[in-house]
Structures are given as C-alpha cells and as structure tokens.
Image 1 (cartoon, rainbow, N blue to C red):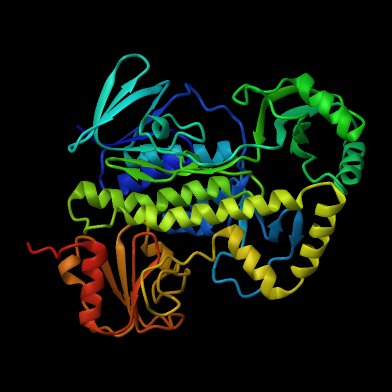
Image 2: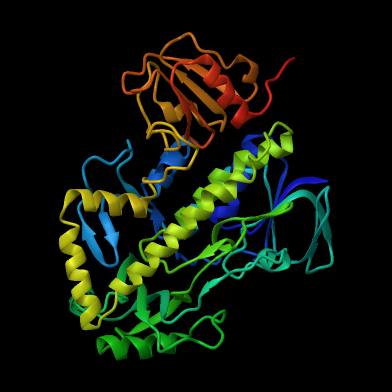
Length: 476
C-alpha cells in the first residue's frame, strides 16, 4: 500500500510531494495530462511564498530563473510602492511563469524520490478505515493510506468525495493567452496604455521573441467553459475593446477564466483531503491563486507526514482545515473586492480612485500588502502574545540564517537561554542554542512550516507545546 497518492501535478501537488518526501513518506503523483500545457496562469511568487522557498532551500533556484519585483498594494488595479515595516526579511516577489515554477518543483520532487505518473486520469475512489482505493481511466487501481486532491477547480477528487463547493458562479469572463503580434511594439504599448485608463481587464505584456501575454474581456460567459477559446475569439474581442487586433497570430496557448468564487465546505473527508484550486477558486486578481495552493501544501505536508509516521497528536491533521479554510475564505473575499474595483463604469472607477488615495496612507498600504502577500497570516493557537501563530521571519544566527536550518522540514527550538530542552523529541525537533540578537523572545518553538508554536522561557510550558504539536516524546 502506498503512503500517499496526490492527484494533480501542478504547483500545489508537486509542493506537497516535496514536503512529504522530506519526511520519507512514499508519494505517487497522478497527473491527467501526458505533458505540461505550457499555460502560465500564475505569474510568480509573492513574499510569503518566497519565504517558503527559502525555508526549503529552493530560493536560489527560483531566483536564477525569475525577476525580482517590489510592489505594494497590487490590489484591484491599484499599484503602490512597497511599504516600510513589513515583517519579512524577503520584502519582494519573484516574477516567474507558472511552467517554470512547476518544472522546478517537479525536479525537486524527483530528486527527493517522489514518483510522477503522467497520463493517469482518476475516475473513481473508495475509502475505508484503512485507506483509499483509486481507480484510473485505464482500469488500473492503486491503494493508498491517504489521498490528496490537488486536481484544480473542476476537481474529480472533490466530486467523488462528495464535498460541497458553494459560492458564486461567474458573471464575467476574460480571455488569456500567449501569441505573436505583427503590430509595432511601440504602437502596442501606446494602445494598451490608452485602453487601460478605463479597462483594467485588458493588456498585452511582452514575453520576448515577439510574443505577448494577451488579456482581454470576453463577450459573455461561454457555455462550455472547459473548452479553450479560439484565436478568432481573441481577434474579435481585441477589435471590440481596443479597435485593433494587433495582428495577433501563432498562439502558444489560449484559455479563459471567470470571476467565480467557490470554496469547499471541508478540506478533509476521512482519508481524503483537498488543497489548492480543488479547495477554492477565485478570480486571479492580485496573483494569489498559485501562492495560496503552494502554501496549502506547505501547511498540510508535515501534518500528513506525522499521521503516516505515527507520531501525530490528536487533532493535528484536522488543524489543516481549521487553519487554511479561513485563509482561503479571506482570499475569496478580497478577490471579490478587487473585481468590483476593476470595473470600467463610473461607479467602480470612482471607487478605485478613492481606494488609491486611501492606500497612500502607509498603514493602509501595509494592511493591503500583507493581505495580498499572505504576510499578515496569524493562525489561531489560542491566547498568547501577538507573535504566537505568526510566521517567524528569517533572522541571522551565529552561524548562517534561520531559514537555512529549516530545509529538512523539522520542528525547531530556537533558544537564547541555553537551558531549555527538547531532547525527548529529538527525532522530530532540532534545538539551537544561539544568542539571536534579532529574536525578542527568550526562546521560540517553530513548527516545520515556520509558524511560532510557543515562545517564552518556562520548560513546563515548552513541554506542553511540544506534546501538543509533536506528539508523545520518544523514548528509545
């Protein structure tokens, strides 16, 4: 029996495979497509996802194939400078097309020993108290102890598991694709600048080699939204919105997206879990979708590994839903707000102008930037200091930096006192005694995802927190 089957080989599924393999969990990823599509819906990593990559030793790989950007706000067409005072040592995003992100994560998953099976479409599943049986379209079957659906907004796993997906259907639709254009680049830039004064759901972004990333409002909602639009659809809509089709030709890929917002009622049903777009869909405004999915996987991976390894304390796996469902709901809410701001009518335009003026206040810019980048997330771990439940920033240690010590996805006791102990949990938790001048607390206990599970200097309190998050102590 396989430990975990992950359905879906996009960024969420591949990130989860990496996290599970760091704990030695046997992972098989089943991907319906025989090869990557090359579509680039996600355009990069926000600051929290940059931190995630740094924690797992992947940041330099990402930086080598991306471009750094620093934009505050990035909300509903409103762009502001990056605000001062954000709680991160990585105050930037990385512009990186989704196919590149997938390739890097696939390479890392393979290095760690995960198996990716392409051309394997899941059509059935049945679970019992011991595991989940998965049926593929070719009639083959797999049995696993756990199954995670990372198979997108039209998730087969979600449907087969009987999880409701309430929310709002799409009211507008947008065409998105990559193609060449014969029009002079200066003329393209001039027309785009003029049209975007009123229509923010429009753009031609140069991609190099004469290619453009084209975004243009669609003419209503397609009856079959799973079907890709045609090049003629793009030409027609470009002429309707911009007065020219720019001579677009030779598309590399064509797609569409809407403003539907839906969220799974439950992220776990028995031995089946959901992550990424299988758990939530929303408009791509603010570039949050890929990041939200990767961070779902980052939260789930170590908890599911703990279940497989047999040391998970009661309720640990259920904390995945408890922590990530509210985060997903928050993203859906801000995405709805951004769609309202993007409208071309006088009302949305006036609202956007007011919102832009409000974001000139530094505290408003910090709030919105934290919302979009996920730097503002604080999980509810119960009463305690403000730092409890927050993500620990990357700080300098006597020997290197903190995130360099988190590559193995273990817990970490960072101890300025030198007198605390996590020895009975040494198979799950590392202990670093370090003066850490940047750390304000006497000591902090970090979960494998870098969130502060405890802080203080009392050994009894620390022992309680170790037991809460890392289970019973190990006695060799």
